[in-house]
Image (cartoon, rainbow, N blue to C red; front, top):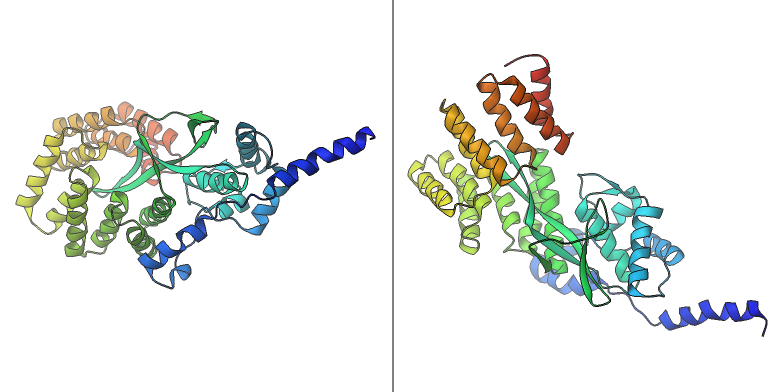
Length: 370
């Protein structure tokens, strides 16, 4: 047999070996659960964030072989995402797999949606992983908006690794747990809701967060953000009810407790607010936003020494959050310490160059205003 004919037989044999593989379709697997939780019209409300369409499937078929070892296919998937697509990081908005493919942009959850979709097309077993020792929060007007951090997990040759954005090499996290596709969909809608909250689009926020809590009624971050919508709309009784119900499931959850303090204060239930503040103090492991909240309260009362102490505790709790540095900025501006204020504004902007409050303070300092 001529050599060129022998070479032609190899790809044919590989294609035949893989022809019987049917990729896992998460959309079909979740359909009955979506209908149970959202009703028969769920398809009009929900987009499966890791679903794949024909355009993406064709691109995968053309550029990634289904043959070879798991490690080789894993590397090919990553090269497809970061090489051929040339995915670029964008904090917002959170995208579905197909939106991430179409725009070539996305955040960490957007990347995982695409990684899961493409990996499952190539006989891999990627899944969603919630990292519990790295969380994202936003703090605004005394209220904590919650977002989780999601990475991809996958077993390759019997070893589990996690895959994150920027850079996309495997990473090890101290405290993580694999979650179901249903829970991942809840995270996706919570992200959309949190982004809408930060943009003051309360209609969109409420729409997305209602889906999130219906899909994952025990998801603490969605419960928290759903309550924030009620707070922002001055539906204080609803907010308290949502938060108290969330705390029945997660009694030591600091964002829920912190926001419940704010809700009680707005209801003028100051005794109950004080009880929750005492509970937060007793936990002794509060989120940085608890300390920022207490620091702002002390600053409003004119106690700059206590305010600075709380802001420094927030910094020790987490130095990688812009709002922590902005809490220090507020104290340093109030005490006329411009060099320190400038330092922490610059730190906040390095963490998030688009942060509106940081940019506002940077402009204020540049003008020389106190």
